[in-house]
Length: 361
Image (cartoon, rainbow, N blue to C red):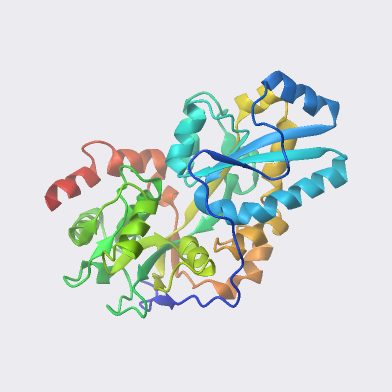
């Protein structure tokens, strides 16, 4: 490890801005006053072509809502100013995996911004997004970044400092099941990478991660249930979580916890893409592509940073550098073989995670 000292942070908000409650999966809200959601694709296309009004639907994962509540009005105003056209954006929030399934099953997303590239790849494989979508937006279509945080009870009574503390016999953990939760896949890969990206090998990583999961007291199906187990039911000493989720929860006054950012960590990358089949049907490709590009501007990236995401824009990254603990060794899922490789190696039926689970029983 390049730096044996852990980065310990306790978020003390100066202000507590109000953010609307997160919507249920596939629940739709509207950025401006809209008539009924229903309507034919042909009508939407005619509206777009007329120049009077254009609509698009954004489908994303729940924790991004606080940022989009600021970003969307800014884009709407910019489009009106530059194009003289009203744009109305419908928003759907929920778990990334459930949102992915909803789009494949017919939810009419024009833009998807999800928690992992593998989810967008599934939509591509369903024939809705053209191959090569990663190159259609800046930064290989990665619009948000975060890292894994070890969230503890207030004051960190177990004195957790870094990954190796998670195998101590007196420490009990909560994390979601990576077989059912996309977010939990990042948690698992962070644990594995803490070994193999710090001088260890696969055999050592397998032993370490197996020992960590022996300390897991509950393995919920998704991140929401994990948070409920930790906060509402009082289970575990440590919740493995995203840094941005811890920060946002503190801003909303929902938590009074400490958290640690281990200095060897994985870059949690959230991608965005235009859903080609839908925008062509709706006749709104121009505004959809413009919206995606707007998400990479400093203006939009500052809004992501305000709610805890690590910005991908270099200028904004410099502006907020002091607000985020330093990561001495940051690696990506590509460094572990890419999503296709890690899915087969770790999460497919009979793969490494299943073997670890059998060892827990």
